[in-house]
Image 1: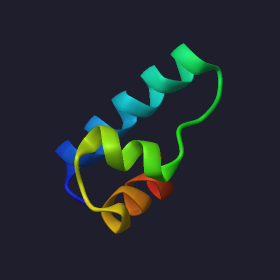
Image 2: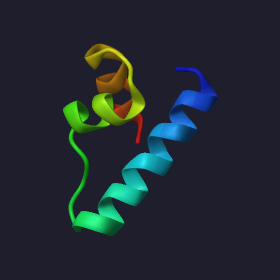
Image 3: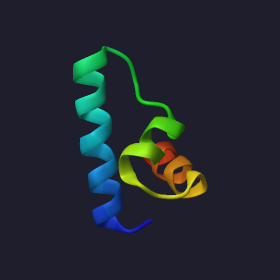
Amino acid sequence: MPVPLLNAARTIADTYRAEHGEPITPAQLRARLGVALPLATAAHAQL
């Protein structure tokens, strides 16, 4: 997993949790990162 992608995923996930009070799903992360679902799912698993 590229470090910049993981850092972006972490920032997006943290912001989402702060705004919504719950963790982001892999599908929501995929939409916000603009990557394929398998890559978003892999990033999500490392958060």
